[in-house]
Length: 139
Image (cartoon, rainbow, N blue to C red):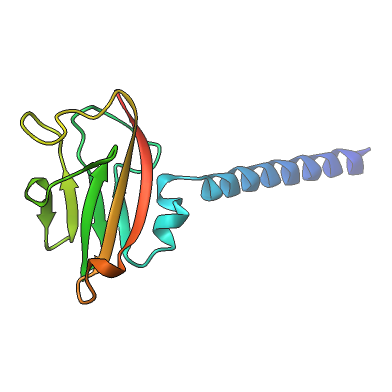
């Protein structure tokens, strides 16, 4: 009888340990915005702004963070953003556009918005550009 009580406690302890390990593993493997395969598997692209499938405000900044040595052209909802309306932070190599009054896009569309970025190595030029696209929701 004492052996069955001890055995039951050991089995319950092992079951609790296995459950805790399963929860920890699930948290570690959970899908987050940082696991976007088109970003993590791309040496040129460091970050999409906002991330794919994000929910943002209508005046949210849209853009891309690229590895050093790359240049970019941004299109939002089919509208090419003029170079003079793109903010480039050279130290981060980040290219962004923020909708505002008097700009080519004054507000993001309610609901789904999609961005397309053509990017290329500065030493080869836009003739050899690659593209990346993603969508997000604005309210």
